[in-house]
Length: 232
Image (cartoon, rainbow, N blue to C red; front, side):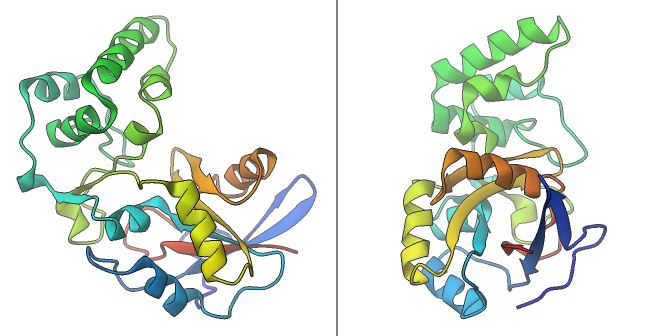
């Protein structure tokens, strides 16, 4: 297990008077067809201590569930082409700002919900309010990852959806590890974070987002899709 910090990221952070270590775990690239259980056993092993929390990026969960699609396999409808033009792209990712990712959002969330989110967002943006699109579209839309130049191949040419049943995945992984640690499936990037599923309560999830808000696993080629949070 690697305890080396990713570039520009500290290994420790203090939240509400408690110091927490964020230990990134460097791994090989997860590929479609990989078994998540075997992957977790291989890289987490016996490194957990009582009181630890294992956090797993939603991307590797989704990939092992077969929810990764090459861009060339996706044929966007005209509505996806239209809506994607109005999505703001950021330096940290395309989001739904390309026709292929918008098409997958339409499939995942349903056309009525995406249209409602787009309509409300268009109105509230005029008044300087941001974020309403994803608040209405929901976690499934927010969790869609599009290809970027900084993404590890082959996912620099793929769209990855959010994981299915993340709460069940977290509970399963906790059992797989013999209850040695709590588990959270997280969607963390350089713009913020969200806990998609976990074995902890809401208050702890909120604290977890604060602990991870600087995205200690990184956003590019770090190859650290797992991490351990350990209170000092």
